[in-house]
Amino acid sequence: MFTIGDFAHLGRVSVRMLRHYDAVGLLPPAHVDPASGYRFYEVAQLSRLNRLVALKDLGLTLDQVKVVLDEQISLEQLQGMLSLRRAQLRQQIAADEARLRRVEARLRAIEREGVMHTDDIVLKKIDPVRVARLTEKAVSYAPEDIGPVIQPLYPEICARLERAGIAITGPGIATYEPAEGDGVLVHAGMQVAAPPAPELDFEIVDLPVIEQAATAIHRGSMDLIDETYQSVARWIEDNGYQQRGFAREIYLHCPDDVADWVTEIQMAISKP
Image 1 (spheres, rainbow, N blue to C red):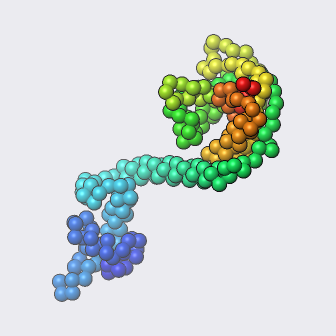
Image 2 (image 1 turned 180 degrees about the vertical axis):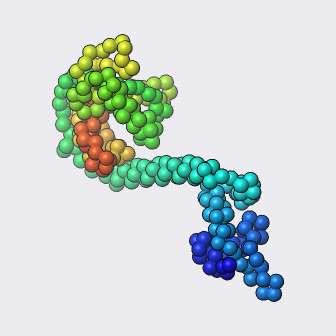
Image 3 (image 1 turned 45 degrees about the vertical axis):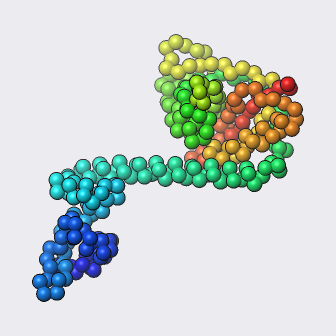
């Protein structure tokens, strides 16, 4: 047997928590010395302790944990619950990290108000281009709403193109259209040379020429692209132009590390 201190060390919990688990009937010691009142535990009790802590980390209350443990949940069921919780936590961490990046980008934009550099804005004509694309609706144009919608579309359109035997001829292009309310239709496209065909499970469209576009290169995560967009907007206003519709995003380089992404944004403009 192990003293409460040794058992706490083995189970990576505090002595205080072991006493609490005993008080609420979750994990009583294997033996209590009648003279001293010292608690002693057996190594087999680590199994219940591990399940107790795991279920608590899932967000269950101690009363709920007791019910689950007393029903003798199977190892497979516990592993399934923990795997689901792990996926949820990873998703939450990713969302929090993305939110932090957006906050940092907004802070930089605020710090640079009035001194945003527009030297890298290029005015050019954009030739027409044919794309195969899939479309979904986002509830708004905010990055946290666009990202979860557009990200799954690119692997899906690439997989469908491969099944159809259609070669990709250039980088991905995202285009956007206003939808009902604040909604946005998100078009995830890949450049192709194939003609439209009714049997395809995606559409093939020709994006028209843009006679005048204000363009800029954004380097890094799409969560931080607001600053680049605002630089282009400043250039458009300072040079007496008006924006016409949503911008196009051309994904020139998309490695695994989003910090190394290279994206060109193209805003159609004209003189008023």
